Image (tube, rainbow, N blue to C red; front, side, top):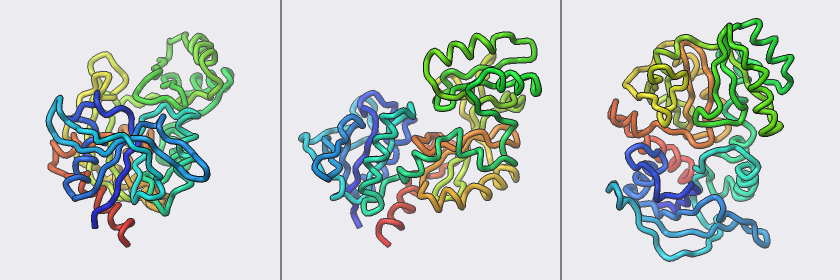
Length: 314
């Protein structure tokens, strides 16, 4: 059954259509006969009891430099749509949180993917805390004394903003590094949020594995290898994607977290695993499906839409 699908995302013009997961999801939806509507996060509003969005009918095509067409601008009531995709990128700030509250008002009568209540309540670096046996030694704190004690215990640590994304603000502090105090001052001057510190995992030199989970089930993984001299493996800072399979430990991790993700309406999730440890559970705007398609021939977008159609058409 054709569905009316609205996509809340950042501007579509500048995206890399060879890597962008939202574009691939839209392309698959169109191929399945679904109607597409696109709007940016700043065009979402609450008006007289209705959740409205001002945007455009959308047609997409896999042609670089000519990958979309927009219809006439129109304002729609999102309660009239079957599916709304929450695909705006972080930062996970009050603007993002406000949008989840607004979308909460139409879900689940309109299926919002991923469920905005749990996207809001399960930030990527906090949800993992529910699985202490799966994660590396971790501390979340704002005060310097606590973070210093963690570093003294573990010697070699990663320090990063709790609500950061894309590898921004990630620092490795080795045993002889003396910059913790200065970094704490820097972060404290920027915002009032806590920091997250984790024991450094040497296995990151072999890659940071992104595992794609659809409706609680793993469908494959890619490995992201940091470039020489770099701790971060994020692809937009030079990480190299490569083909990789799922290990027994990967499946153990997925078996532990999959039921919770399915129960909370998290249809498309990307988790990060370094060695034997889970480091993040990405609910906001996970990526990696195009790389998995190229490496393994796995049409993840198709699997995503099968899961959505099953829920929407039941």
